[in-house]
Image (cartoon, rainbow, N blue to C red; front, top):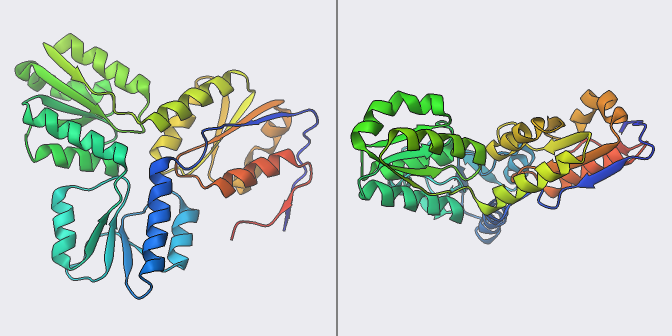
Length: 304
């Protein structure tokens, strides 16, 4: 047991309404558990981490659901396509290896893929706004590249300037955006493109859940001395959320309640505290953080 003694008299603590699992993540986690329960004698794999959350991955491993870091030459059982999506080429490799693919790509991510394909087919120079190493962005680009070689990824105007000559030559630019990106990033890139291209077609594909989460958190931040963002450091939507809020007020990004010890003095000094969380953060993790802060003497066991 761990004891904490945060001095919190007259604290105003608010928990964001749009905190924790979004629809796509909830669907993926529930479906993969159901797949294993309905197929106890079958191997159930996920290609890559199902979601960016260590606690959830450990929970799935205990249920016998394993994570594949790459597609083996031969395999058997079910192989789940996670919510970030994959390219048709990867899905075909899964089939050729002997797995039964189950596609749990988030419906919002599928819309981005389809829009990128549409723009590629219509001969636009396609710009995917997002982080090039993120699995969602990799899949979006791969799908569009099936129909055009003119597809690039950029997370900033500086990165996009590398393609300025190609953009000017092509004249027509189509833009899609990673579902968890910041609207400010999209806006700055679009402003730049308008200055160098003759035609710019923009599809704001930031998902509604991300937009609502960010909008609510910004309003809470304006009323707070401190905002605590809960979620994995590997989660794009969580890190973007923390980045946005740091521009408004003091913000800390933690993965679980144990990390509160690192900010004990800051928490004690803050009167108005808001708590929000990324789309891949389980509700019980959020609740533990809230409980630790609300209790003067919280004696809670570490998460198993």
